[in-house]
Length: 90
Image (cartoon, rainbow, N blue to C red; front, side, top):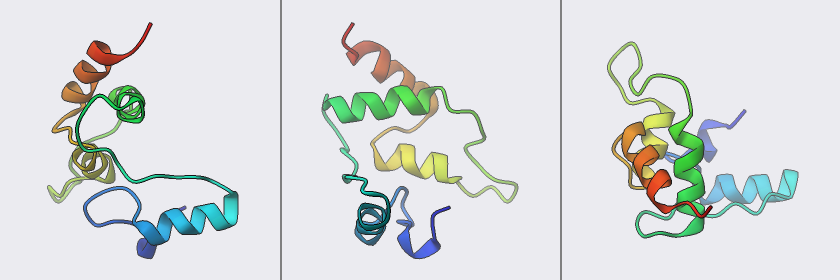
């Protein structure tokens, strides 16, 4: 479970969150790549394209899923899916 202080309000983890997971779990997390054909961005798009769940909560606010997609430069699951399909290596 990610604490609120480790979450970026615009989606994903903030620098403190990435540092926390490096210290506690040894994870080497990096900030989102917002544009281009970076392999990390393609991988993110492929993972999130298959992720279930709503883009908005009961009150009409964007979910963490929607915020993460936006942080990586995608407006929707369909956009992430299309990007992954067009840029993944076979």
